[in-house]
Amino acid sequence: MYEIFRTVLLMSLFGSAATIVLLCLKPITAKKFPAAWQYYVWAAVLIAMLLPGYKLIPKREAQRLPIMNQQQMTAEQPAAPDAAYTAPEMNNITDESAVTYKTQGTARPGDIAAYIWLFGACVFLLVVLLSYTAYLVRKRRNSVRLESCPSLEQAKIELRIKRRIEIRMADDIDSPMLSGVFFPVVYIPCREIPEEKLHMVLLHELTHYKRKDLLIKWISVFVNALHWFNPLCYLLRANISEACEVSCDMSVTKAMSDEERKLYMQTILYLAE
Image (cartoon, rainbow, N blue to C red):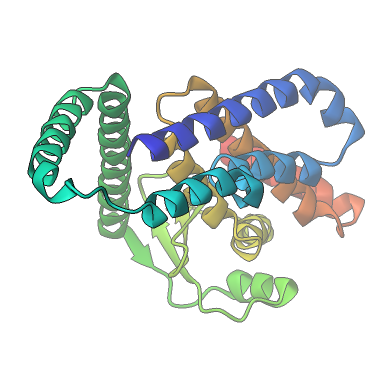
């Protein structure tokens, strides 16, 4: 367990350094690079905090040679003539020293810290999963399904999405949202939305689905659980969420005309109000 915790600490240190560098360069990179670059570079840091890349570097075989030679010499060494008489005493000494070492090793600070980390990660994930499940159940109860939505079908055609996606109207939300990685559902506010504005809204939410943004957000939750002790990980997650929304807006409006982009911005302001 301690080895796993040490690996997490190393990944956390690397992620913290990368997060600090990106935060310092953000005023410059936000002007020089597109929004998609911002999103994917934050996602790269996220993956680096999840996968221990340095573990993939092979160790030199030369480091193992001294240990192997020592084991071979021990195995080939002939036994002494009186080994049969001294074996019980040596075994007793070995067993006693092993027991003493084991007793002393159970209270190491590193092991205690590792189990505290594991407990915190499990609690973090449990709270998030229970909260999200309760949130979805509440949304189901406070929403009604739309059997027919031409704007949704038109948006799916434009984005070349063939997957069946459900749309529901909820009375406890102020802005549209997408939920469900495997069973996607679009929730829209329970109020009158002009058809052209609804089309823009659905383009935004379905672009999130097409780019697998919900999957990235869940990966960020899992990484946050692993590094719950690191405050910079919370900043990383917030910046990923911000960059995700901005890059999604840029992706939606990339092929639009000036009039359509104006309508898209008006839709955002309309929903915000």
